[in-house]
Image (cartoon, rainbow, N blue to C red; front, side, top):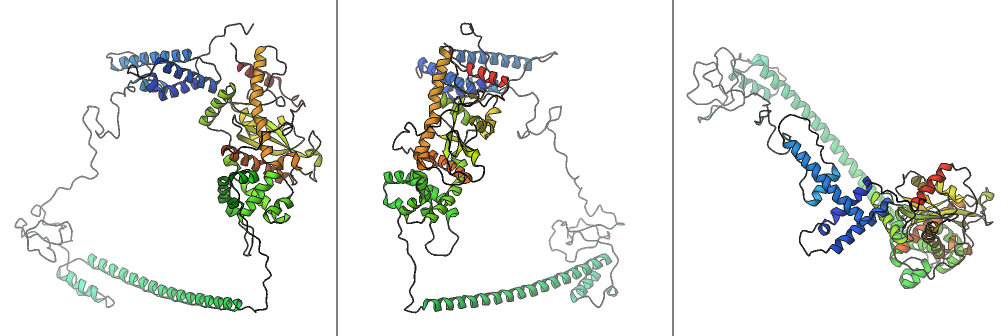
Length: 632
């Protein structure tokens, strides 16, 4: 009876209004064209349909184009009325309570889209950078207070005769100065009638005699005291000059000490340079002696034949041998060459390029290390060391190429693309697990035995609609259940706290959650069957991705015998191959053939590992899944 009942449409949420305003603002030239004939109504209706489709893809609530268009018209009408009420309340006179509310950000944005100006400013407000200055309540501009009171100019004729007065060192020759004032003139009288300067000197002070001087003072002090006595200067000025002379003596002493230290430093530098020259001469002499070898002495050195596959092979052969295009290999080589360079001064050390090509060849074939080394003229131990060095160098680049969308824009774009491909809203990717065979470890070997009877690592893969790996988890032994791996992974914890903003798709081996949609176990009606069909098509993306990953890099496929490394090194190889798969997929490198039946044989786990779950978790997941089934 729930299918036949006419459900009441939900009100628009804030996220829907945010998407609606963004899309309308981006297409306002098409939707609100003022010139007739520029855009047809069919084009406008198509644009409204695209807006409704994006709202459905991101929020999961099905909205028609008529409903979205009606919501926009109602929102604009209410905003205009609110703006009119605000203008009326602002400009009215008389007493009363102002009940008008200011416009919020969405309403301001809507007014800007349809061509209205922003909300009115507050009357009597202050703009700090307007340049008009701060005004008093009366409306007049208020001037800033002066920091200092101006000192009135006092002429020499108004100065009292009984107190000392500060005058300039250069006395004016004007006739305005009285002759009866006890003001002392400067040492040098000017010949012009210019105004007095601002340099002060103390006047009306007792004359200093030569008795105040000491025998230890220099000739400069004697000359200064004589000049001061002739000018009738004060004893304070004499003491000041003495202090200055003392400071000058101290400065001269410091300068002499600095000059002595500098000379000693220069002498040390000269001695050091001479020692370096002697060492260089001795080294040169030793090199000349070492060059003069006896004629009968032979140099027993094995010269490895240099062979550069990137220069010899064509593009198809490079991809066939190393699974990556030539440009991608050179880019990786430029990134990790410093890490692969051997810290040795011996000749014929392995170059970074040889190490990288040896590791890529091992990833692609999964063959024995001795067979891989025969193609490059390397020994088994050299190939083993090269694979280990390249693996851990590339492991630091995995977060740059295997990225799960975290920002709002990335989530929205991924959800929209997944919706267009499989018609399931709010889904960012599909998750599945796979078993990678490894060498049976010596410690806790029983933990790594999977349900198929061999030692393996349970690897979790999350991919988008194009088969690009968004997340890979390789850290749990083969006996671990897929649901436990997902619950303990960072993506699983992030999905549990997503609050319904995005979801993942999983097979029947995962528990049903609001953030993890699984197929209906026992479909009851046509809607359940339609959902299962859409879920099956979308879930095949991650299964094909895992098959292509193992087909491209045979080292992680069971046909290659598995990874003959420790569990830690095997997990590193799995993550590196996932990164290389993304690089090859983004570069458009095609495989020799699509995954065949048996390439990916990790069937859904039939174990029931959900007995410990709470009933409300399953009920919430069931409601979330029923909500996204499409009804007519």
